[in-house]
Amino acid sequence: MLGRKGERIDETAADDAVPAEGEGEAAGPGTAEAEEAGMAVGEEPESAQDLETEEADDPARRLVEELESANDRHLRLAAEFENFRKRTRREQAELSVVAQAELARRLLPTIDDLARVSSIPPETTTVEALDAGLDLILRNLRKELEDAGLIRIEALGERFDPELHQGLMTAETSERELDDIISRVFVDGYLFRDRLVRPAQVEVLTYSPEAPEES
Image 1 (cartoon, rainbow, N blue to C red):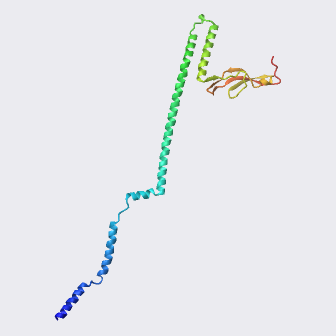
Image 2 (cartoon, helix red, strand yellow; image 1 turned 45 degrees about the vertical axis):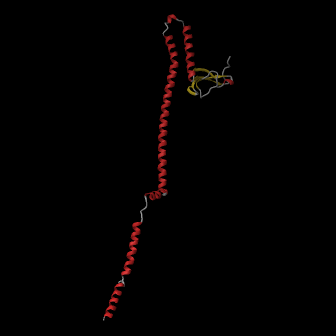
Image 3 (tube, one colour; image 1 turned 90 degrees about the vertical axis):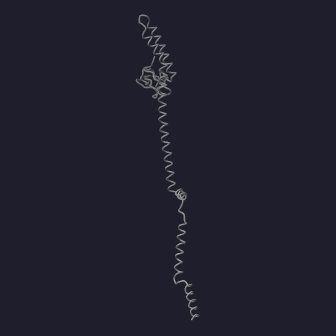
């Protein structure tokens, strides 16, 4: 009996040592899930630097950034150009005022001379003296204006030029070589630094075989 009891005891111990059916199989999947969970926990999310790198590598985003940068440069250049235009106009206006003031200053002596001539009592002078004084004032005035850039257009005896002369009258001539020649000047014309201020108003000869011969 003891021997059989011992055998039974051994069998019982052996039975206890053998794992229950299904225990090993249940442990396998659980361990795999734990390992997978551990790997999931151990994994790190993408860093901000990685995200920035991906965004930088995006062609569409890069194109948008380049367009925005180009637009900013365009707006800055447009603003700078507008400021340049305003500054240039302001400087030109200031230069014009300075030039006009300088011309007025140079004409003041002529104005003073005219004032003195007009204040001379008629009984204390002669027509010849007044004429000489006025002629001197006129020469001085023309000199100041010429120095400032005003040039009188030579017209008498010159060939008619529609860019410089304004024909008011015509006169016939029997001499063919005098055709289109200015024979009289009614009003002088002027240029200011090659810019036409006023055309000379003139009479122009026209050739006509029926015109009476000039003596």
